Length: 325
Ligand SMILES: [Zn+2]
Image (cartoon, rainbow, N blue to C red; front, side):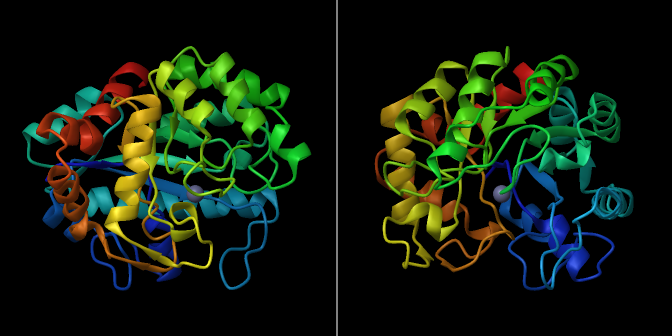
């Protein structure tokens, strides 16, 4: 069935496997072939650029290395669109998405996870916009030019956006880039809520009252996000889903629990999907994107109306795209 997924790390996986495109990949949870089989309407594709040397992964401690990594990820995105234009096309607005849908094509929204690569310069944000970036996850798990990340350390968690971060949120509002607070400190979240004139998203986060991970949103944050017209994408990562941190298996039932809590807390207009496919580890009832229908089937069995399931699967995110890009 049609759905929009606000976050996956498949571009990074393709790079690690030294593949030019994400059309057909092995040992991943997403590739274009399977997105088409799953009936996806749009996939947000994150260019994830860390700020450190990840052992056995990426060397991105220095700005030059971050920029190089960004351009490699962008290359995989561009190649995918060029080589498979019959089935997938870029979407930079709601009009592009609707057009792709009319033509029977999957929409690819380009996003950036960790704004560090902006290096504190608005002209870089403009350059990312020109490349087609339509969502920036302001931080990853380190402090950067926008602000600081979620943390178990209360002082860091309370810290807000930097002066550049505040200016950048306004600039992103003007340009039409979605502000994403997943990974951000609580202080940063409240700054975004105060400053952003447009709806913003937590592209891949769950409910902190069901799973105490600092990556998740508190009930107060869910309410504020909803009041601002934003959406939170349900994440499949076991440590963001399960109460017991040792439980490394994500069930459909547990995901339904987060959705139901979000509905009771923020209402039915603030819920979306942000799987975090290819950036998560554990075992999953939803083993890859072709199994996402299990979630919608389960919601149906729980008595959710078709209209409500459509909102969760794609409608709420479509509304945010229309309002922000
Ligand atoms: Zn992430």
